[in-house]
Image (tube, rainbow, N blue to C red):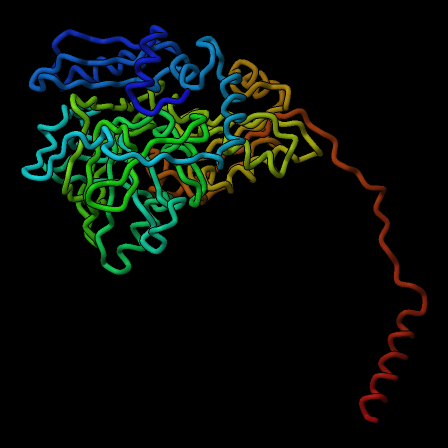
Amino acid sequence: MAFQSLRDFMDALRRNGQLLTLHDAVLPEPDIRTYLRAAADLGNDSPAVVFDNIRGYRGYTVAGNVHGSWVNHAILLGMDKTAGMREQFSRVDELWSNLDKGELRWVSNAPCQEIVVDININLYELMPLYRINQNDGGCYLSKACVVSRDPNEPDDLNKENVGIYRVMVQGRDTLGMQGLPYHDFARHLKSAEEVNMPLPVAICIGTPPFLTTMAATPLAYNQSEYKAASAIMGEPLEVTSALDSELTVPAHSEYVLEGEVIPRQRFCEGPFGEFPGSYSGVRKQIRIRVNKVTHRRHPIYETLFIGKPWTEHDTMIGLWTSVPLYKQLKAEFPEVKCVNAIYQHGLTIIISSDMRLGGFGKTLAFKVATTPHGMSYGKNIIIVDGDVDPFNLERVMWALSTRVRADKDVTVVTNTPGMPLDPCSEPAGMGSKLIIDATTPVAPDRMREITMIADPPGSAEAAERLQEIWKGAVKA
């Protein structure tokens, strides 16, 4: 499981028959997206796909669908290829217990800095760029890990953020990026813009597979994605310092784009085919000026196809969204058995739990709706009994069919935070929560028949006596 690089993981996939190299000559557009869409449609055992014969980019390689199936994910976890989703959930839950035990190993002469380009930067020449979906507003870096630091606490490496955001190539050395208000990156940007300072960033492509996963996982603000990836791997993650800033970058990245955010300015970005399977509109977003590009010799350009499910996006982050939610619920409600949030980054969340008392299912739903991730993403929340596997949709549908009373078990909470990229969010960023309690009804904790408490006889006279004494004391 100690994959220090994308190449290490690709070798493991190759050994397990889960990596397919396409030697046919392909165009960046439309061929790459067409093949990656087709790969995603091959099912739960779809392989990673490598393109090594790209017209116009002799000597360049593109890799896609690397995290794109549950078989690939099982290999990443060091499990048998036949491990099912519930088994993999349990493995992620087990690994999560060591999340704060990760360490870093600093290296010099890092592979990611074998080649340095700091003059005449042209991203269109350095990478075989293509539009992920045909109506995208431009070419996007869809699987890039963006590194930034808290300007107010630059020495606190636990608050150095590594996140996956959509990054649009807008010029030879210019990028646009979307960082939503609840992302850690937005906190860094806000602090920098308050003093009108550029925010240094490092955009890393082709990173170690567990770091890519952690970058898409809802960790706490002061949890290091680097250390988390190290803890999951079981050995220190190898990192190095960026050349133009103090930022930490993965030593074995295929590419590192170093630059800075232009403060207090916004530029048009989009549209982009997003994870709900629909195009987002055009919005004004930040712009990044790229000052330096470093890369490995013969770099691998890793890309992520996004579209209608099922795609690599869903497999890469599904269980790593489910387990944090499970941990947050389990800490206060030990009855919780499992959480399935693999659908479109948790827009739909299924929770299985034993019922402590009547109404307990709705309590769990309200709780998940107030978690940092569920607050904006979790719009459909389904609660099932603890003996129902939330990853077994046949059992979930059975629970919905036999245990839901529409007048009692369906609740809609309006005017709640929403996910702006959800096409149902109206206005963008606002929505509603649908709660379906598909659990077996549990009797309430009934008290005895209520009898009203009567005032003791003579209490009115006693009140008059107290008033009399009180007034006398005041006059004295």
